Length: 165
Image: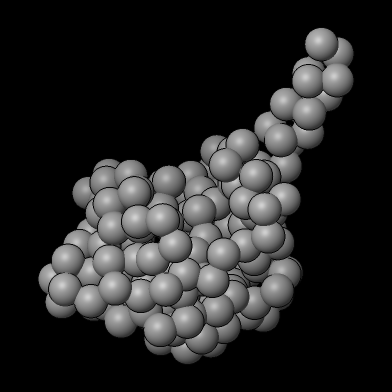
């Protein structure tokens, strides 16, 4: 995976920043992307106007996805096929992301800014702008398998089909 950092965020980015609570009546994964970072109007506009390529990176510091356990915070990002690299994630947000197949990468020492080009290579993230490499904290294999399958529903479907053979 290789792409540009489209937004750099700090610590404690809550689910209300990612997906504001006033849109909680919208729950369909096909509709939630329209409200991703709705209060960051410039970034939201870029997303909605398809100015952000698939597999672009959101980079954050500590505790990304804290606050409410709303699943829409993960589904709205999945709708744009974004990759989230953070020093660490809120436990519930991380589990929601895994269940939905959102690419989440725990990288405790990540250092990148908007516009940098990142590449995930094995167990590291390479920042091509700075020339630095940062170690990834891998997810357990079972959780990564769910992400790789595209989410828990797809993973379960695959497992059921395997049993029928």
